Image (cartoon, rainbow, N blue to C red; front, side, top):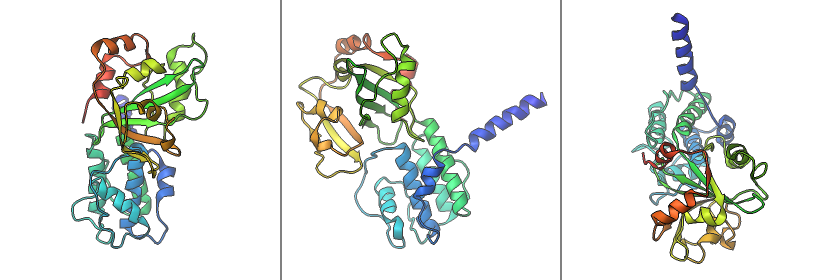
Length: 303
């Protein structure tokens, strides 16, 4: 009995102390002479970006930049996404403020951030990595992608609902990214290299839906009637239109549109008539997936 209890406690501890993206966060930290407030802003901004690609701002303004130094862009990023505690400033940063910043971040996904002390740079790095791990475990991305006759990926979209800013994420597939094997290969094994290629240290994919391009597109757009509204891009690019018209939607979804040159990830919403039940049912008969009804409903839920 004692062995079982001990094993359970160790399992809980391993979850509580799990970390992700430590090196990515370390690289985002400002120099050794940076203040705790600057370190806090840079760590949190990078943590958010790792799990929320192309997260759109929800307000304008630069935020409290006095004393921000090299972290000024990170402070503005957090301010525009309402991730700074009320009254926070880089110069007035405290350990309690650090805990509040991580709590606000995790709370957007209906989870609790691990205990944070903000004692020093090393502790803040560890605590940011643990908070990011909690969030990464909570999110529910559902990739939907298309392949051509040669099994190459032509577009990769992610239904991204379990987030403070529900939206459609569009990823530019690497050149010649393709399903593994051939038509006889089981779909989980076939999809594995595609999911691995588009996954990151925080935002990773294990569920999937895929089909040929014509069928997959019908899950998102009513041909000739739907438009695509651009909410954000990564990297932020000059010249990306606010909207792609009905005759341009497919070019945007597949990154064939020249306006998207250099863009890796697009945040978007599809506007216009939803595909009818008959159209969706017809598509569902053509897709390959490892997602059942319960899993689909879980991915479509909002926090």
